[in-house]
Image (tube, rainbow, N blue to C red):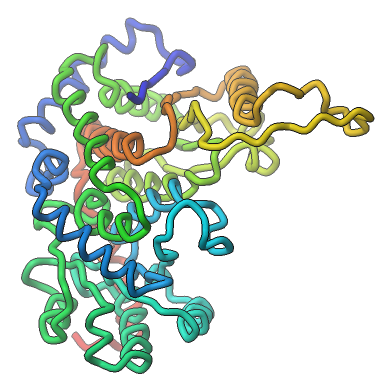
Amino acid sequence: MIRFDYSNQLLFTDGQIREQEQHVANAYQQLCDKSGKGNDFLGWLDLPEETDEALLNQIQSCANRLERQSEIVVVIGIGGSYLGARAVIEALQHSYKGFCPFSDNHAPFVTYSGNNISEDNLCELLEVLDNKDYSLIVISKSGTTTEPAIAFRILKKHCEDKYGKEWAKQRIVAITDKARGALKKLADVEGYETFVIPDNVGGRYSVLTPVGLLPIAVAGFDIRQLIAGARTMRQELLAQHKLDDNIAQQYALLRYMLYKNGKKIELMVSYNPKLAFFIEWYKQLFGESEGKEGKGIFPTGATFSTDLHSLGQYIQEGERHLFETVLSIQQSRFQVPIPEDKDNLDGLNYLLGKSIQNINLTAEEGTRMAHVDGQVPNLRLIVPKVDENNLGQLVYFFEFSCALGGYLLDINPFDQPGVEAYKKNMFRLLGKPQ
Ligand code: PA5
């Protein structure tokens, strides 16, 4: 089970935390009895219990079909319609899967499109797809988002030209709203296999719907274990009502108190590059949920020790407006021994007998000590290892904490009105008909 350690939060006495206990208790109550802002978007809260076997079987059999016919599966979507899937897939898959198809599983290589408007990126993807068997999963809740719509129009045409219109249909799956939006209409007309995004689940809370589950299953990972992990965390967070026993309440409250005391930036840190996209998912979840009405922590991230050689100087001695939350992974999946070298010209023999994972954890400890000395509050999520179950726990933990964080700030954590501003300008400049 994931644990939370805030012993290095630096700023508050126990008494000061207690003074705020009622505040987070109210937020927790609002969330659990579904009486808070945006309560028509709380479907994610019960997903781990409510996702039934029939849906999981349908997702798995679709994934198996895509796997049989594809070397590559392209997931087309943006924001909440792709980040959750990518977060889990990149955390679990071989880091060099593109170079070694013989690695841990025989699943297709999952890649992503429609999350930018880069012509070069699309062109390079088409070049790859010319020479590979592939399928497409197109995901959009609204069914009208421009970036994935452009990518899908181009990739659909490529797929139809390559396989013929009828065979292309077997290679395209749509995940969208049950009734509205251009993608739903198009999928119905073309006869694609379709999965529904529930009305009451917003994009960034949709990892445990087909939005995340289908791509994760296609990549060869165990979606039942992912859900089991989320279910374990859900049961824990709903059973433990008190601050002392509820890690989401603790995390949400500490973040809120740090923010109110000038720590406006949260740096989500991992010491495992496989979690880089998990941090991207966290950034979107918290950024879109909390950043409104002139409020909200700015969520950002780093991979250490890599970024200690770029951001490390700033974190240690720059402006004191940030705190760190560390995803502390206790076990690696594999071991690589450090070879003995009699000449010891590189001076590394003192590390003999230590595992690389142990050295990484020691780097984490040393960095924590240095940053705490530098007055950077440090929160820590202790994760036994990176697997489906723990990732499911983390997903649910962050979703729950994020909702609490929104209620602590007295904002609606489930809307994103600000995202429309750039779109309006872009459409006007492009001359989109009204
Ligand atoms: O979290 C959200 O709601 C957003 O990030 C959306 O997922 C993103 O804008 C994509 O929207 P759609 O799924 O409608 O294409």
